[in-house]
Length: 150
Image (tube, rainbow, N blue to C red):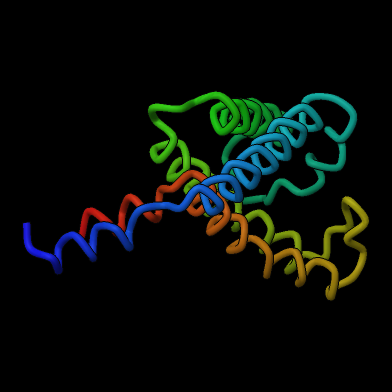
């Protein structure tokens, strides 16, 4: 193996400090998702129901319950899955992309929920959705795995 390939491969490995930060990030994101999913099914059900856009073909309650189950599943997978961690990262990122139209709908239709009672608050929420996508890809090593395959 050439020195250049060794150097390149070494630079792409994840340091132990970075691995620790990613693990913490993954645990926090997984806990957040699991908690959000539980809140879909219990105490915040009405708030989530108010956010379901008109274009969703399912009933509002079915949509809230289904998304809650998905969030609990994805959050649990972030916390527990080891061998399929990068796949889980892509699935979580895809989920955040899939629910983004609902967040846009909340902004456009000026739906007040979860303390988001102004266009500014709802707009800030929109800005953070891509951050969640990147967080999922970074904390699971999915983006790193994608880049090292190329």
